[in-house]
Amino acid sequence: MFDTLSDKLQATLGDLRGRGRLSEEDLSAAAREIRLALLEADVNLRVVKEFVAKVKERALGADVLKSLTPGQQVVKIVHEELTALMGSGGSRLAFAGRPPTVILLAGLQGSGKTTTAAKLALLLRKEGKSPALVAADLQRPAAIDQLDQLGRQIQIPVYLDRGTQDPVQVTRHGLEQAEAQGRDVVIVDTAGRLHVDEELMDELAAVRKEAKPTNVLLVLDAMTGQDAVSVAEAFAERVAFDGVVLTKLDGDARGGAALSVKAVTGMPVKLASTGEKLDQLEYFHPDRMASRILGMGDVLTLIERAEAAAGEDDQEAMEKRLRAGQFTFDDFLQAQRMLRKMGPLQSVVGMIPGLGKQMRGVNVDERELGRVEAIVLSMTPEERRQPDLINGSRRQRIARGSGTSVQQVNQLLSARKQMQKMMKQIGRGKMPNLQSLVAQQRR
Image (cartoon, rainbow, N blue to C red; front, side):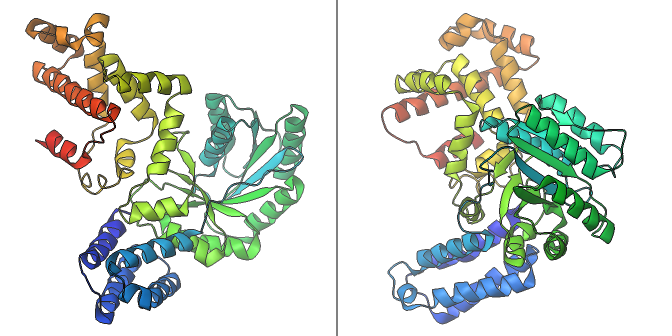
């Protein structure tokens, strides 16, 4: 989502990095470029002015101008101010001392509330909670059916009542059932409309009064840019919410909503949807997002995704094999399946420091993973364990069995050898140069 902003900020700050000394003119010119980049990213004008003023004030300090590495100091300042802009520190959900914890989702129609409710329930279950969903959106005819289907898909109970048009009654009965069944978190999906109006706010206030939520989360569509910020302002005036959930953060939006909403409303972004799948909802970390924008990668999120994708036993077994320098096609297949669980490849690549920018504009074809898996599954168990057995006739058989060409089979065999070489280096404590590996793959 932040590709254009990221490119422009990195270009501006990269120019400063290469200079031994910085003058006030250099910093003023950089401030103008930062201002333009933020405005083009659809960041709120008032927010831009305040941000640039803070960066310039700190950059003009004696510590920067007299530093031996002034450019790096400016980058550090921009990173810190970007983090502060989006809300310093992680902002987790609050949980009631006495269950159940009630989470109320609010927002306009089309913002993704219903899907977000299911995603949040799945996220909380992974954290050891026992969630339930309440279908209190009675304005959109398909909302109840949608939440019911999503609940069945992730095997989380959905409390609904098709015989009434009273969301307060549905909420009351849903909470009673959840409590009776020992559920410790209840997520209430409320109605939305095409715009903020009195009827919407009155209904939301009534449901809130009944639910007594521990958290009220405003769901905003990041693709709507400044409109999302305007919606947040309107809700902030009428309904006290505790935080924001940004949806479609993986889309082509320019990023203005994510960078503006905290400064405008005072409420932090708590969660962000990073894809269409139900497991693609993450806690929002301002410092990590600032690092991604400035091209520094996001190693912490990458590690968390990898740990979530692989079980503890799998991690230990894989680590032992890698330390021994072993990397069979069974390992290759396991690693690929783990990679798929970590989310869209383009997103994963963007978290690797120094690699995201190199791969910008390169189309990562997810279907290629399917072809690779077909080739590996066309091998015999013995061939997967001992790839050196695969001679010319075996390669032809594997190509026919997987619906691919011998050339594609050869490419995979070559890639495995490179991976094994890299794993041996890691096992000896030598980290290979990622940039050289990317260059090899491109050739």
